Amino acid sequence: MHIGFLNPQGNFDSNNSHITKHPDFGGQLIYVKQAAIAIAQMGHKVDILTRQIIDPEWPEFAQAFETYPGIDNVRIIRLPAGPKEFLPKESLWSHLVSDWVPNILKFYQQEGKLPDAMTAHYADGGLCAVLIEEETGTPFTFTAHSLGAQKMDKLELTPENLTEIDEQFYFRYRILAERLSMNRSVINITSTRQERFEQYSHQVYGGAVDVNNDNRFAVVPPGADFSIFGAKARYENEEAIYQFIQERLARDITEARRDLPVILASSRLDLKKNLLGLVQAFAISPTLQERANLMLLTGGLDDPLREETSDSMTEEVLAPIREVVKENDLWGKISAFGLSDQSQESLAAAYRFLVKRRSVFALTALYEPFGLAPLEAAVAGLPVVATKNGGPSESFRQGNKEYGVLVDPEDPADIARGLERLLCDAEEWKSFAQAGQQRVLKTYTWESTAENYLTLLDSVLSSPEPRDRAELLPIHPYFRNPESQTDVSLEELSDLYFGTNQKVVKNGD
Image 1 (tube, rainbow, N blue to C red):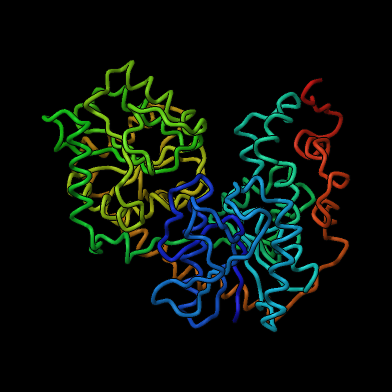
Image 2 (tube, rainbow, N blue to C red):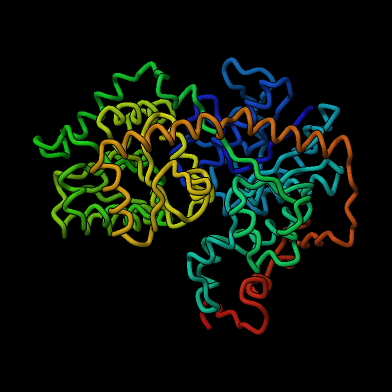
């Protein structure tokens, strides 16, 4: 089987330099890479289709083709879309329609054959799959990773602020692209049942897909890479990472406290990751402050609690954290820095180092669609305290069996209680460390992810069922010809999100 992975804003390269450098580069890129490699290792041909970037800031993404060392059957194919330089995903919509999709069709026309099927990732990948399917009949699955409606909810959209927020996030394109993708895909792939029933049931997606139709959904959880994050894995720079962490702790932590366990958070500096809630939990708990230090891994920032950054979105996350640290005199108990080597391997080494200190991994996101990071930490041997909102409620609990401690991310006291449960009882720490690790080893593997994708695609290709054209949503004129006269209006978005009869307040009104 020949499968194309559509991920236009996923900047893949053989050195994995994409992982933490930009908010657009996150868990979905790891997902696509690992799923693609696992499928290829089962004997299938895989193309990861992404956007070519010719920009001195991003030299890794200039080549038209690249492969992963030692991995046969996987090609990274970079095709132009709009300007040569890097663009954030919100700025890509018109270029995908006018350039990227035509370039994909031209590329495969020159090769003589399209892939047998596509698997589309995120809203923009989904839109491109819709347009390719419309042109060629190539079937596709849709994996959203996250949906725009939930982000709109978190931003507390109103008719009054819709114009301003849309100017930043372009929800008018994203929502319509998501509706088309879930409507026209042969199947929608979610990581959890909760993702299916809570996210796809939002009123914004009404009429696009029936969330109760089992034929339109499949749960395919991602996996952890045991060769990188396993407790017995070793990185060539393992000892150097250990030394680097010790140096940063020596820089930030009072000498008498440097051997204490660590409460570790490692995530993008994004408001929805709720690092502030974790810091507040630490601040209100004398017990936590007595028994552990707080350690934040902050990507490429070396000392962000003392030094302001030039990025306004990053400052929006860090500024209130600095205030909590200052007001509660947490200096000497908290450390924030980025690892010297921004790679999955160095992160895994950090996890293994902190296991030796009986540390705890914390993910206190307001909502986490799946939550791959805590699974990676768990397989390395760290017990996990995670948000109860989203994927961790399924991955770290099954019936009455707990594999991690779930907490309310909007209640710092509950976060503190969850952390205290592990840090104040050696037996609890050991029990949850073992339970979480075994849970991941048995349930969350990339091999099973690949097998599930292949089973679905094989079923689609061997027994294609033509869709009733009356069930298909029309493709908006903008997605066929992106010009000002065809543009998606804010009124269209408002009608979907708020219902009818809501007046959008335009800038200047």
